[in-house]
Length: 315
Length: 279
Image (tube, rainbow over all chains, first blue to last red; front, side, top):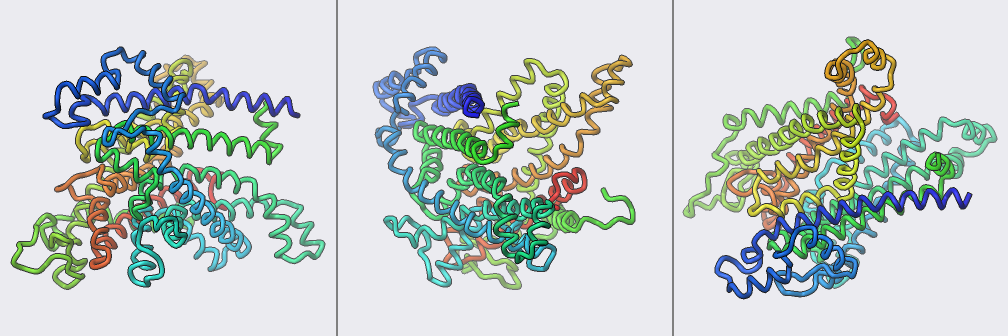
């Protein structure tokens, strides 16, 4: 069993190598293209020629492309993403400073999508084809179709501007009241996905015979749903929660812009806007790495939880 | 499409109705709009940020421009980007997917590695990164970037269908009879791949519309005087406290249009591929 799992693990990690090569090559090529003429990029048309030459050397623009890529990867491995064109600070330092705010927001949004999505899916499945089911599922479709940034503005309009219960925007020095609206906004899309998936897998499980047996034993419908159906429906739901990572990373630049949240998403937008290429591409790379490694982790958890997938993967 | 007499798919019908309204509104925008969408109020008349009224049914924005007119014209941009990008994506993606799935080999391997790399990025993040490559923001960049992002998914969908079809008896029979590859691909394989292609393309249109609005909202997409719902939302956000209508209506239009596309896409999937439908 362990040997089998070890082989699968080695296979999955091995498959990462070409992806990581492609990802780094693409990010490197994008920064090279975006930098173009570093004089214009960093200091405008009337830049001092000596300063331009210094930047050219620093960015190694005088060397052939493959050499530049290999050296770039070499620095990357040592945690060196270059320096910001604006304030000359190391890109890794800028990113590290913004990372906690994004992680905090992403964790809160995931908790929202589980805390709301799973119960909604369970209730909808238990009351299948009822008015409540239709209403909840319509709500889920609405959650999936509502553009993140507009939802954020509307929540802020209702709960901050009109009702005055919560702050309009900002980080508030980490005050949790400031976290509520951004987390609801970022989590909304995924809440809808989780609700639909929970309902669908419960209904799938409900067709199976062991539930008939449980009912025949005279167990209450609540016990049947919670103890027997839900446990077996949990596996696809866990996967979907993991897949929410993609939604979180896509939603982060938009949500953080709406709420002036000092995270990586906002940093990405501002640095592209200011043409601070090293910072922008550093953030793009971090997002891609988090996404790739996160997806691998979900895969592995899935393998560990559900023995059936292990056999399928080994074959 | 359901055969005559069968029950019409409710979600599909609702989505199609919504889309029809938006398509009509986009086409008829010049006749439906009560005012010029670009007309800036002159300083002497206090018409900026007016609430909805008989004269301005959806109110005015910070420059005194009529929001109804701008929502109507913004719909043209949104639909044009959504559908226009997807047409190129379908053409490009299905040709590459057909060839890769049918012939396999190096082309297939290259395609799969390429899609792996594109899919390793959260889509909007890669879009923003690619936008940074261009010198100045604009709608044309959004077009190019969304095509670069979209074709891989489409190629993968078509490739997957082709792989299944390739082994079926009737394709094998056609091959054994010496039918030319091009004829097999166009007459026997492509028509049977149309179902998944259509579903993916429909959902792709919605994705393009949201992406365009998102990029324009972030200030990285369309620039004035191009009217985009996303850019209108960015403008509206600064006056959210005093003039919420400037942000409410463009967003509502985007939501309903995307909802229509998603309903049609889900409905098509239910009809064309019963295995993956909700119940």
